[in-house]
Length: 117
Figure 1 (cartoon, rainbow, N blue to C red):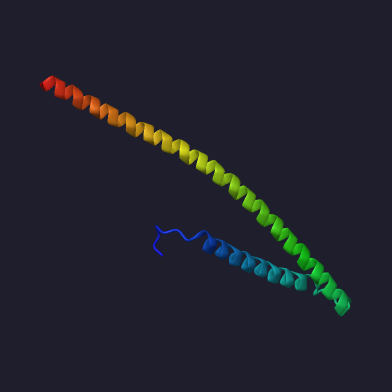
Figure 2: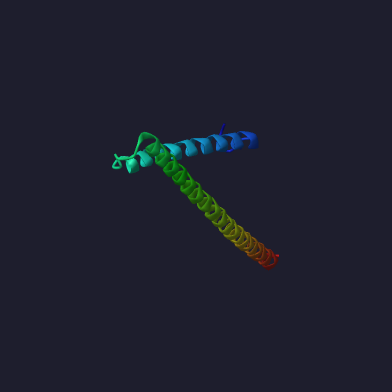
C-alpha cells in the first residue's frame, strides 16, 4: 500500500484489536514479574498463599494499567478535538487570506488594464 492509500476500516479495526491484545499480554507479563519481585522477600508465605498474593498483585497491576490507558485515550481525544478545531480555524484564515490576495491582484490588474486603455 502506498502512503496515500487508506486501509479499509475492517483491517484497521483488526490491527487495533491485535495491538490491544499484545498490549494487555505485555502488561500481564509485567504484572507477573512485578508480583514475583514483590513476594520474593516473603519467604514465610506458603506456595498457595504466594500464588494468591501474586495473582491479586497482577490483577491490581492490570487494573491500574487499564485505568491509565483509559485516561490517556480520553486525553488524546480531547487534544485531537482541540487540534482539529485550531486546524479548521487556521485553514479558514489561510483561505480568506488567499482570497483577499487574489482579489487584490485582480484589482491591480483591472486598474492597470483600465489605465492603459
